[in-house]
Length: 308
Image (cartoon, rainbow, N blue to C red; front, side, top):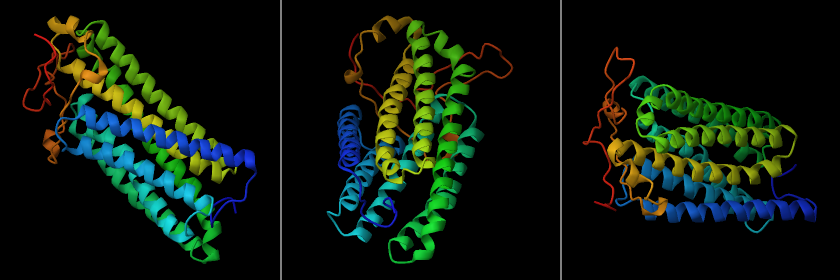
């Protein structure tokens, strides 16, 4: 089998491609980790922990897959580590988007639906795949064929989940959030465009991942997957932080925003476990087509001062 039940036997050219994917994923994780510890002033909150766990999950999945594929470590222990890293990498990234969903929508039910979808998919997609994968690598040959089928199902399921979340970001940016960012001038318009582009790129990356799986390249798919998730995490981290900074700026002070560099922005994201706090940083007046906004200072994470 092509990596389903043990180390792979592949050509030198394909081995170099796989090694290149592993190296790129590790390099991206290094950049993410540096960005996390430079950006956050205090290390707490759902956004911080989901970012950190997702990044570490990519690294764990990458290293354990590399050691397993090239027979540099025992097969079954690496399979267990691969599953743990897979949980953190895939579901962790969805939790990252969930933790920042209040920036683009004021509807509590959207956040509750997204959270329920993440929990249900974890139980329906992660757990059966893990049982079949570990059983296949523990000598239960009857698990191999069902694993090959369910592997494709879970990959498509998680792609649909991430497409739904990305679509929700795009929809809310084009409806609820766009009038607010329009008051911010060109900077706000660029944030809307970047938000749409980043989520569109995420959907395309998921499509490319599905292509490798459904063309019977399991070994390539499992090594390309950490690269895809690391790229998406970098893009989402950048655009969500830019969105937060622009929302917190008063329209009269926007000329100072252009002078802020990305590395100078220090955020302290906060998140409450209470769903009643899962709202946008603005109050929308009911029945008002203009949807005037009022900043909520109680939930705004503080920024380091960089100007008058």
